Length: 316
Image 1: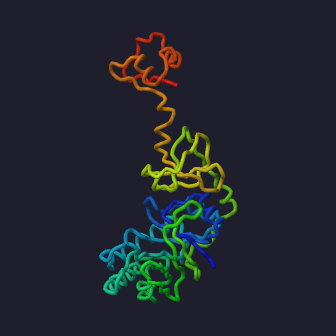
Image 2: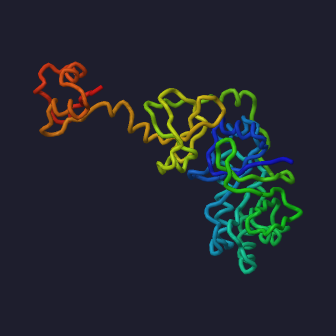
Image 3: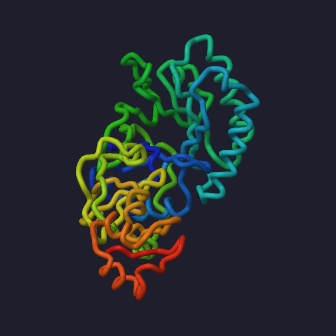
């Protein structure tokens, strides 16, 4: 059985390789310009890792009133533009999501939406993602079908290309959904050369002081559920998401998520005290548990009584 993932996390070469090593063949990612979308650099990383890329387009699509012919045309045109910009090959699929428990009363507007998409989707094939009811209703109206187990009550269509059977789990340190690939899903193919793979260098990140380690990017961003400490040193960057960074000592293996803001807040810049009005060198020495003499030596201060407002005083 061939398996794939879909995820909102941007992938680096390292994280893409880790997914490949975990046994996945395909990865579905989002077209567009947001925190969860891919670009040409990510395409190169995914293909260099030996994964097959599948395109998704989803701006909202999680409530009934979103769907209409007009919205379908808007989404079809926008998806086409983003696909061309990213270098997606002609004739491959773009999957449009129906990401809610759609009822029988919603099917008419969902059909109109898909027909609107097809009216504007230049050079690409139309794929649809949704529940059993959605996929069964749209049979014959799209070229590719991706069913989710959610809202499907155990029913599975017999003509689908992909089946999403598990949500919100972790693989290779990344939050993913798992998919069974039943038929060729309209992926990009493997267009990346060996030279492109070699050109992907593993970036590094310097941790300046002890900072919190987190299980995922969301926790790092919220500064909650710390699982330990990342010590000072030079690390490989395994992945980045929403401004958070996954650092590791072992190349191509997931490590810990950190919040770069914590690293900056504890950087060498904070080894300086900014002098405020009426502060003295004695006060500063007491505040940082050091001596006036040491402050004078660190800052080349001849007269301990002569400091000025906004002066940077190094204290260690």
